[in-house]
Length: 433
Image 1 (tube, one colour):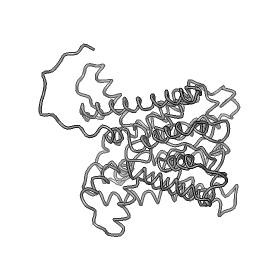
Image 2 (tube, helix red, strand yellow):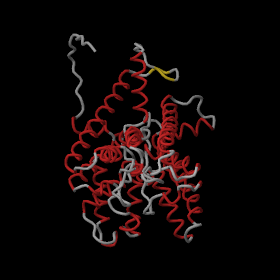
Image 3 (cartoon, one colour):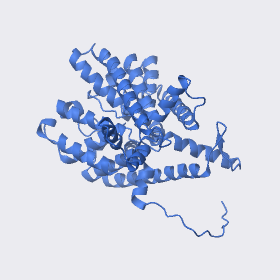
Image 4 (cartoon, helix red, strand yellow):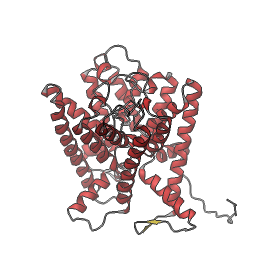
């Protein structure tokens, strides 16, 4: 928690330097931008390509990279590369940061993670650079390819185009490469390693965690596309004027970005209220544990749904993929969803009362911030809806972004402290439900 805060403040200080931005930049806007970058969100209150210099762009993409892999993970990796001894406490922190199942092979796993990041981002950079080369000089195309590859893999959504990806709505290369970088980054390193080992016949069976992540990710993408296409197909403000290919590619692009990243190829302010409302559920879900995405995570939603299903059936033994799910895990999923919903609802109500702006748009913005998504209905120009907020309201959004990146369970534990197990057990009370 403190490492994220220190990184954000340091990033804001660097962005405030005269040669990092063009024109006036208030510290609250620098802090907002740094938080959005470190928490890989993508909400902006300043136009990234216009209001920041090349040095500012380097600072932003560096913050995205460090924030995406995690500060503690990056520091530990540097220590490993310098052949420093990693003590037990640091290993425990690293284990939690990477969502690694155990302590065995942790350093080796860390090296694999960093090698994977370099390879995936390099491949993404090459593909995007070749595409951008059609529209700009080679040197500029390489920089744009690198920036957008890092931003996409880390689920950040920052772009060096003022209209984000709207100009490439019908471009196959962009609509294929960026969503897949987002998906791979959002699955989690444990899942990626399991898939790789399974394909190389090093594993006999895919774990329950990986199966749930893959199934939930696929279902949510398809469901998001279906909702967008069914509600927006003939909407003259959004999809109505698109070709059939543009409608499908825009729905695919938006559905992938709903849960993790803030890239957009359409104007979200033109969507129907129904679609904006349903989008909040996808954004709250976020990505998967151990990856670069935020939110309450796909696994928490999956466990909650499993718990509801077996409770309605009157079965006390929940299971999936022929594996039992403990009551503690299901209860933890319920708690995460409930607490996250409370945070978002309270923030939305406060912002609505303070800013006197449309409730649904504020709900969309707060959910996007908490899920570290970065999608927004906009301020009427190229900035996020948050650009219309007062300074205290921007601080509210900043807190939501930090909370979503750190994790609602970890954030709440910081506030309430760890529970002390009681040695006293009371007689069971009967409550009618």
